[in-house]
Length: 352
Image (cartoon, rainbow, N blue to C red; front, side, top):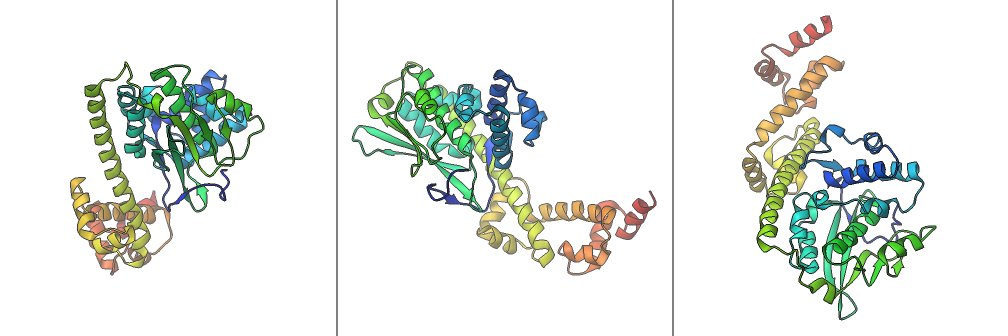
């Protein structure tokens, strides 16, 4: 784990997710190193049927577990840097092609900062002038949930290593940062990091960052294509809109599940739980083609069926746990959903 007293962090109660291409690249690298990448992905909880879906995202819980498994399986402390060597434009979704079509490395970094959520919403990226008058500091600030970093130290190695690897391919193989910093503890073989980045590397630092030369960043690239970059920017924006809408619906579902046993199921109740204005929440759900009532009814139907089939709770207890003020209301709603009363539904499954 990254040492909490040295980690510049952003506290979050939410988990995070990473674009699927990142985990797929890890699996591909492990295969090349002689390990069964798919087997390790599966062991980490990754649904292999989704790994080639360009829009899929994997939970940070899965990615942290994947790094732990990869480290244990390979015994190589620089596994994150090794995997970085296998990234390609598709690793970054449509953003990869925007980056490659950027007019300069500076423009590519600006795009990374702009679209940071696509890559990994468990961190925050920034690009600022460095202490040196001719340099810039590109920083990866890791968020935390319950004092746990949402990105493993191997994941930080992987990301910063991937940026440098990509910049070498976009500009010149001799490209190197002026220096690199990591909040992680000094590894047993720090020379492996210095060899990879070809520059001084600091461990136990206050942030995870690359110090980059301004002239290198501003040099015009022969692969630059403004039209292609802007077209892929649009694809990224559309992806993020879908992701953010899906994420909002998930947050509403989770909030309702927590609030239902308390009898709190109104728009105002959920908006308060999410720290939103009720009218804004309603508008955002409408944009996603749904309403709070639809989500609430769907959850109630799903849970009611599960409770009636698999739990020993009385129908009255089930009604109150689903936020109904009266068991009769559950009875009427369930008849609408299943065409029969909760009692008959439970009896039919009990007989089976």
